[in-house]
Image (tube, rainbow, N blue to C red; front, top):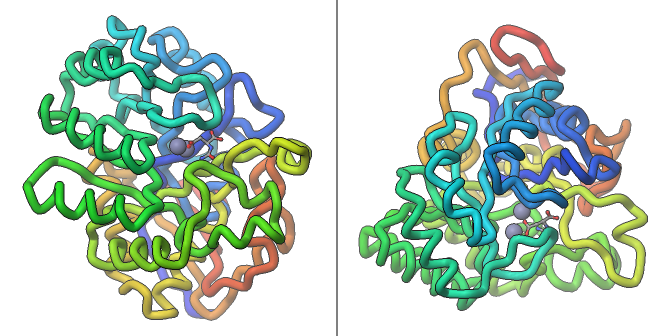
Amino acid sequence: MALKRYPGFIDVHVHLREPGATHKEDFYTGSRAAAKGGVTMMLDMPNNPTPTITIERLDEKIALAKKAIVDIGFHFGTNGKNIDQLLPASKRKEVYGLKLYCNHTTGEMLIEDLALLEKVYAAWESPKPILLHAEGIQLAGAIGLATAYGRRVHMCHISLAIEVELVRRAKEKGFPITAGVCPHHLYLLGEARETLRGFAIMKPPLGTKEDQEALWVGLKDGIIDVVETDHAPHTREEKSGEKPAFGVPGLETMVPLMMKAVKDGRITEERMMDALYTRPKKIFNIPDQPDTYVEIDLDATTKVGEGGYGSKADWSPFEGWELPGKVMTVVIRGKRVL
Ligand code: NCD
Ligand code: ZN
Ligand code: ZN
């Protein structure tokens, strides 16, 4: 056994489904999945059935999340009509960013009206980032608004070669923009839909080999700052029907998949730590977790799905994959949680 100690990994993009969709996941099961995957801090998204767009809903979530076994922070939401809630929300220590949906996905927070978007950018007077679900041309528009209003923006789950290029150019101009990529876009292609069917359906969709190569290059070079899971659990039933729900779980596989990337020579171990710990912490100003660490057995492997899942979703698009390293211990503030 070759145990190596790492700081607790950070995931800045998860959907833990509580309240409102706890048949998919709740704060306990989602945090159990996180611990199994070596994640000690994660940031939960606001697209619940009743979205987190008021301080009242935020407080409800904070109370419900007390049952989690890892640390959780929150992104506040907006539908463009809760402008009076944005300033108070931005001042809360539990809030790490503002989430904006510019494309159709799970939930009902889509804003397509430029006048509403403008109001949101104008009102979010905070150094905390605006996170965007913005695909393709929507991403270009988001860069425009962000620069016009001087806001920091984080582009979630970028998936296209052209998006990597836009982020690269915006960074070269010195704009305060960051980006994340999901393990499923790094490892799976659109063809996966032929075998995995609904279990390979998510937003943004799986792409082409060319897009995937650009994502790897962007991650290696640091143009893409962070790896984020977009952990989006849905039940097997919801993924099997005619119209599968969008999203895949990812908390349990992110770290082993990135250890595979290191082993395969795709990225260095330094870049892995930068993308899973240092930059997420810096971008979202995440406080230290004292006496917190993860121990990974570098001689062992993780067979995805073997021994069951921590997530209520109870499946993975990577089921059966044999990945290097096995998370053995997770300690948060001196307390062993795995
Ligand atoms: C996410 C979900 O299910 O909440 N789904 C997805 O396909 N990624 C929402 C999102 O991040 O767009
Ligand atoms: Zn999204
Ligand atoms: Zn998401």
